[in-house]
Every structure is written in C-alpha cells, then in structure tokens.
Length: 178
View 1: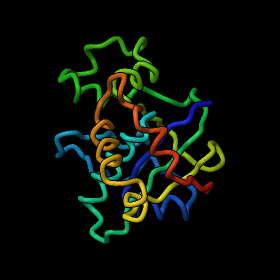
View 2: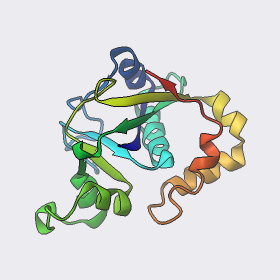
View 3: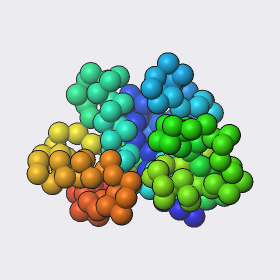
View 4: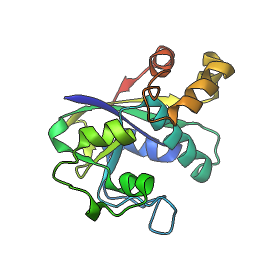
C-alpha cells in the first residue's frame, strides 16, 4: 500500500465526495489542445502534497470562479495498480515515450523523477482508503501567508526539496474519510 494525493477543483471535488469515486474517464481540462495534455482513462496522482495543491489550485482558478476553494484527496491504495505518467514524461523531457524502455520505467521512477504517476482504474472507497481536505481562504489564512507561499513555491520542485514543507502544511490540514 502507498499513500498519494490527487488535487482538483471545487465542483469536481464535491462530485468525488458525493459519488465516492475518482473517475478515470472524464472531460479533460488538459486535453490534446493544451500544452500539457493528459490521456483520458487515467487518474493522475502524486506523492507530493504540494504538487497536488498546485494542480488543484490551477484547475480551480481556470474552471471554478466561485471562490469556494478546492480539494486535495489523500489516497492509500495498492501500488500494483500504479503506472508511470508517460504524459508528464513526454512534457518534461520533450521526447516521445516510444523512445524509452517502458518495461523498465515504472511508477516509482515516475514518482522519483517527476513527482507524478497514474492509474487506469477509477479510485473508489472500495479499492482504496479515500480521504479529502477542503482548501479555502480560512485554511490558508490559518497557515500564514509566508509559510503558504514557501509551500506553494517549493511544491513545484521535483528535487530533494519537493516534500520539504509537506509535513508542516499537513499539521494544519484535516483529512476526512469519504
């Protein structure tokens, strides 16, 4: 079992909570017309709370103008269903994944090098432990602007500092089981 995170906008988060499922077939915000397309049929995950926060914040500011915040899901699941994120690999390395040895590039290498992986399974409360936290202005105000900005800035790093502020930020968050 491994614990990973998934960040999403407010309306998608509410849907996940009420339906108890993170779907792998959805309308993609990062479709084939965007600079960083994601492939339908996958749920994208990260081992970095900061990265999940970045993706959720970005999705929310571009799709949800309600100012209701966004959601981060904490997911404990069987690592046997995890795959490398070849979409991110192609984006980060500017090469086609046909040029790498896919058999030797696994989800662990994807997490180590890119801080992301994916699964081609929907994630439910039946195949995982699924928890969530709602990030809103009240939460960010309680954390404090300076620490929050350091957390957000360092969240985009995929080096040894990528999880530097995760523990500090986790102490301010409450995850609730779905």
